[in-house]
Image (cartoon, rainbow, N blue to C red; front, side, top):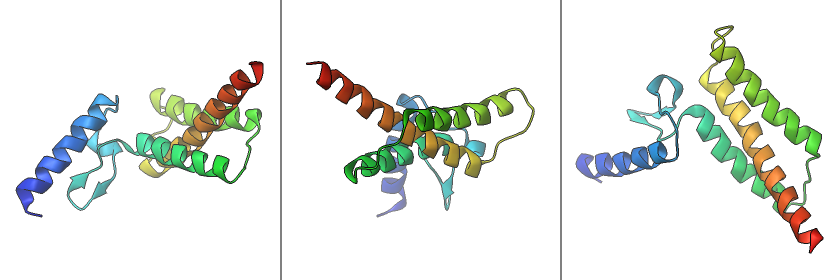
Length: 120
């Protein structure tokens, strides 16, 4: 694929990442070569975590609600500590905490769906 086509594909995914609400800051994003990921490292972690969450459900791994809450709290604390300028987060930490939050999101959504289904 020639360079101009690669740029068009990359630009499409960057617009998509922007529309999804990601800030896409280069200093908080992963790169492959010269190409910035279309979402930041935390959003990349959340998306990856959501895929992992679906796989865990498929393999019948049920995460207790209190663990879901802890996973979400870990990501919030990483964000909050950085927001308050106590300590700067790293892209790896953002990715890991995003993964945990993505797993928790899927787990909670599945619990809600099955809770609704059980009421009918």
